[in-house]
Length: 313
Image (cartoon, rainbow, N blue to C red; front, side):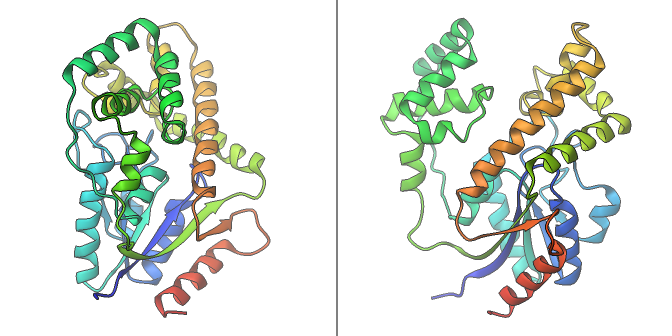
């Protein structure tokens, strides 16, 4: 049996230092970074997605960053397919693949080897669901998913109508829930030998403080210009128009809220997102938590863990 390829996964909530740690480990262990982020793939959307800067990207080779136009689709199926290809390429060069990002569904699907088969499309079912969505709203639609498949619903933001409708469409067309489908698509053997590193804070309040500082910096750096670009193209930019970091400013452009109110809304949405990320990663097994505010130097600990992992210890 072929030996499983070693990969390092750096995950954790937003604003917890994943990018910085990935650069340190890439430099130390001859690594290349594969982004596990659902929004950093889009060109011209840099500040709102907290994309690694050009200087940071020059430190180590980055993959799955800045390669799609904002009107193009990107989802877990596309990510896992491309990430697997990149892992093969990087490993063939004798370089260490480092997966870094905060999109839990992407990471878990990749490391568990989940395969995504073509799903039947129930056009009539989808039309009915979209009509119900228009008439009854996102909250009502999300509650339908909670009743049918609470486990999968816990991984989806209530405002993500695209994923909610798709999950309901598949269930009503096939009788199989997304949770059942994901479980059935997992191979018996995991495809990779994985070291999980997760950045975080022992005190939740410090994480939230860091998030709020980051939002203020984003505003200073000009996130409003990116948000306006998304707002003007919101019918075409489906993914980014629904993303945290842009949609919170739409009411500012519509003249219904002040910039401060929108900024506060972004801070609140980012805190809630971080809480969902923590819930996701806390339920995953074999994660080594690295606390930025801990007594131990988390960078040193990450370096030691990676060294032991690569040496088979």
